[in-house]
Length: 79
Image 1 (spheres, rainbow, N blue to C red):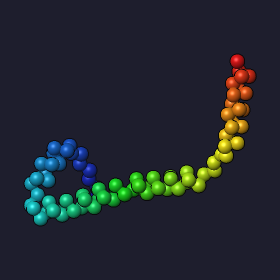
Image 2 (spheres, rainbow, N blue to C red):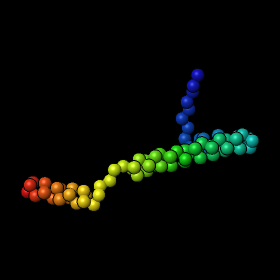
Image 3 (cartoon, rainbow, N blue to C red):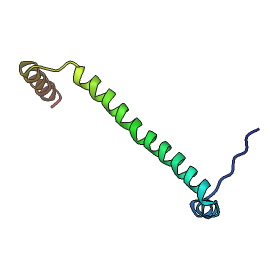
Image 4 (spheres, rainbow, N blue to C red):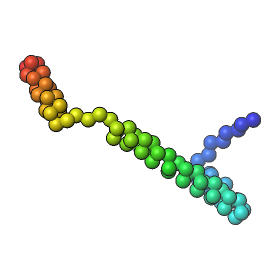
């Protein structure tokens, strides 16, 4: 059976402040572990994205110049 309770930050802080110090320390350690885990995830996603982008094909200077010339040509046709 699962039960969900929606509490605001202030309500949660009040409940936490009522915990005995031993339980507060356990909660702190659990939260610290969760936060550390969350902070590491975006870095992994970013590094995967960077790897993909760095392996992507690129244009040579000549290819890029040809592209710009083609764009200019099409822009002239539209006038």
